[in-house]
Image (tube, rainbow, N blue to C red):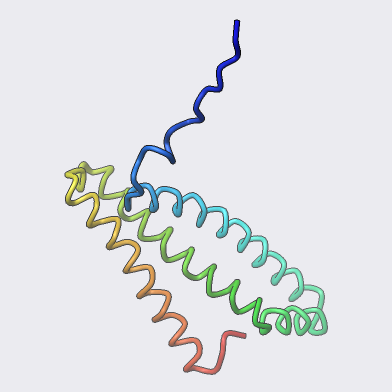
Length: 131
């Protein structure tokens, strides 16, 4: 019996990317980022408990470019996950299952998360910085 090469799962080869696929993947990814951020919050609280020297070291790391990038990404993850959760809450009540509504709610969650993130960071930066 000859061994035939079987095709891999066709999900990425056959289907065209749609907003529903992107928001589903991003919702899971932002959940992971939020979990990592929760560890960062726990680390911040630990440094507060250990004293001002440790807290200042933590603040200095958060003020670096990579700390700011992480904080910005964590803020966007929070906003996107929030609006994704609200979208799912509406769907739990049976709303938004029409194809047109499903697509527009996906785009709305992306746009609103970007707007909320921009608003939060504009406020933070205009009021004196993130750390």
